[in-house]
Length: 226
Image (cartoon, rainbow, N blue to C red; front, side, top):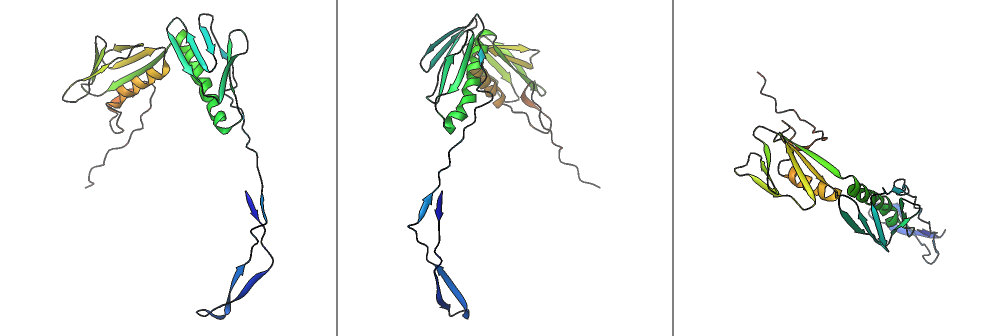
């Protein structure tokens, strides 16, 4: 922050010919050599989510090599590389802790994020995750053909989507889809790709929506009043 201290001397001798002699134009002579800089330190508060320890179940194996972490459990194995702003360490038996390596604003932003990602890895390989979708609309159906998910969504053709490795898809009553796996990021990406074919519209609510999603409805155009 720059602080400029103006001088008390000013020249007000210029007259405006257009506005008359009474109107003066004052020009300030500020000594630009007298400039002071005020430094304000950046305060980075610790994230409430990031400072919580992560409990590791007995059936999960943790391998920590510098900034690389591998988590192996009964459902699968996941790995992640961490940026230099955060670090992962074992604090107690059965616990992991994600902390900031440096005191910067970027480290403060990544602290809570990578703590949540690490917790999702531990929970995913031990318990797994599930994401449910629901088809709403006349004639909207879903079925499984091998490792493909086939959707009938009112197009002139069926939509066929290959199920990624590490994921399982279940279809109930031809209108409810369950995506199951140990990688929460992969589950969310596949569920979003399915929903993208027919997002729910706000007038009749037709489309593919998440099971816990609330679709804000709109009123249709009113008829002409007689």
